[in-house]
Length: 136
Image (cartoon, rainbow, N blue to C red; front, side, top):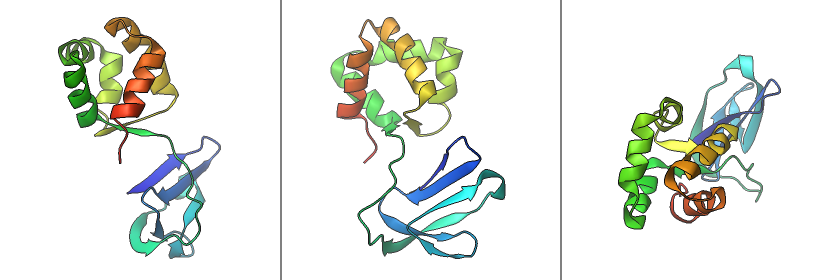
């Protein structure tokens, strides 16, 4: 999958999280990864050409919403989690944004709120996410 990460310094880093070259950019071509000005809005597609180097830029962890719900069900607190999401507009913002939730400053802020609501420590929530919910 193509990952485009805004670095917050006017640049966007683009790469495949599956280890394939990306195609596009300027000049158009196949690249292991790309750093471009954010305002350029460059479009890339994922190729089927493996990246030859072992370096793949590490992006933020991504957590699958489906895996979160299934793991919460197995752990016995899915109803509490769903009720909490439905009652909190700020949590709904990141929950409804896409099928994955990226580990970023916004998620870190919400983990503290979620941990209080579920009666878990922030460390327990992080461990739960890392052990059960990372996108493969």
